[in-house]
Image (cartoon, rainbow, N blue to C red):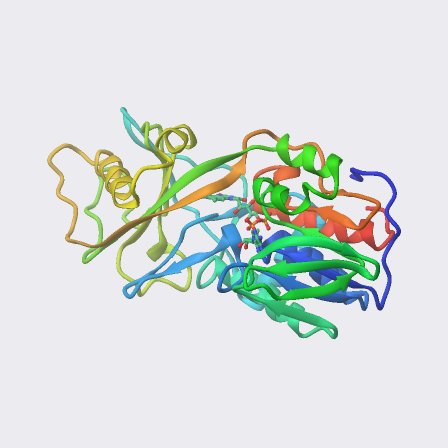
Length: 353
Ligand SMILES: Cc1cc2nc3c(=O)[nH]c(=O)nc-3n(C[C@H](O)[C@H](O)[C@H](O)COP(=O)(O)OP(=O)(O)OC[C@H]3O[C@@H](n4cnc5c(N)ncnc54)[C@H](O)[C@@H]3O)c2cc1C
């Protein structure tokens, strides 16, 4: 779905900057580099992944953003198939439950879901490796871009360390809209307005690691994978130790908060958020149940976890060579993010999608 008017389409050997090495930025960068464009990818984090990143603790690795994703579009299905063949995407979860005041009920549907193996960030790591194998690709991590300027030869990027990168014929910003806004606001009113019209919701993502497996629950398979809850604070608990490739690690939960609760508690200290999410999880067990010894507990605050409203556009661009992609303009899922980056690249290359 095209979103914006004319852009001079790009062809080799044009130089393009992509800000953000989440799944959308990586998908876009790969399509452009495959056509021979010179692509420079920047991310402020230490590695790729964004909201598909995983946290390594001494005892276990935990996914703190997306836990699993679905596949509907045939183009994304093709990418996931390639990830499966590479061994970094696997089917999971299968034992899904819903916990309510009447207990735990199975919560399965016909939808196939995938996760990363041996961690969610293995997928974006694989995409990064594939991208870096293409000619003309440069990648810079731990490089937050703080400003864009337009010179006669094209766009220049300034990073937080004061270094300048470019010139580039086009700049793709795949950061969530509130972060993209600060980069493009001085340059394009329409893109700036689109960012302001795409508010994001925050989400607390806790983790808890135990010395022993969780106690059994009557009527629930011992190796259950996920439980969704109607608890005021806790939306979803997943067992990282049930994910393929992580069976050897100790009992290790990701505890994702409800979005309303997160909005109300986004400024909590992370220790408090973690404890409240663990208390919520404990309340899903019969009264009097003691959970095993806790060996690690923490929480990550996602200030921009997902768009507040369902998007209607896949990507946006301006005729002066600025473009926006990411899940925020299309939906709130891994598939939306990938498709946004992929479709933007096709548009920049002058192909219809
Ligand atoms: C808690 C949580 C649970 C989720 N659960 C699911 C799920 O179950 N299923 C599902 O399909 N999806 C889920 N999602 C959504 C999914 O993770 C996202 O849709 C997808 O990962 C977004 O990818 P993206 O590339 O658009 O953005 P991001 O992954 O956010 O990538 C943007 C990148 O830009 C970088 N960046 C930002 N600003 C700058 C700057 N100035 N300079 C340089 N780099 C910058 C960031 O570091 C980041 O790496 C979940 C997300 C969260 C947070």
